[in-house]
Image (cartoon, rainbow over all chains, first blue to last red; front, side, top):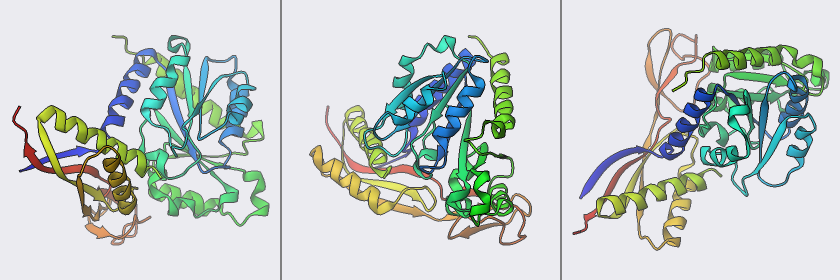
Length: 223
Length: 115
């Protein structure tokens, strides 16, 4: 006999992600998930972003890597509590991994949680982690054809950071072409041009995110 | 290689289904969209390896769903080979995906077990 079930394969992940989202909403924690290719600048961004926000709000960072703790150690120097999550082979983080890692944090003492996903522009965008926003980093040294090559990742992004703009003179990357392609794929996405290693280029992005953190805090619904 | 963890999710669902519904599965049909981000051959390989490892003789079949889009501006609906950065009809905004991004366990074939 045949049984039609039509069950979304990632429903198990989505169920946990929705539980996390509910918990983040109840506690007023704003969460963003950073996705990019390896080497696009996630860790440098978080190190400098962390230094800009430390003392202004209560933040935590989960750093996802296949192996090792180099990134976690580097980001923790910013003064923000950082937990390294090793996937031991998996090319992305899933909601179950985040749920387990959250045991390391006191959630009632948190305003902002940042999740640095495993360096990969394909798989991480398929897995909901309960976040409010997906932030995708595209660096100028990767080439301006990335949005066309990985449209589904840019389609799901809320913010795109075009990083390493200080290296533009040494590349054939066209900011105009990249922006046009990104906005064609996703007309409502917010784009910032940054050089993650230079703090002064992160002010606009930082203020934008701090506004979202405040918004989430003030819209807390307690059950 | 996220197909491995996707295969794991599918297998977990099948094990639970057999237990919950007193059902012995023979074959499983997976519905896979053209732009689901999952490689069919790789998923098929992972599913068979995991099933074998847990002693299940399940057969996996696939229904491939084409990419169907609809333009936000001119409402034109049509099939595409890949995600387009602009509508092929009015050349304006990128069309929305109507179908082709799904990944579903579509149908199970087997027999009920007397409890």
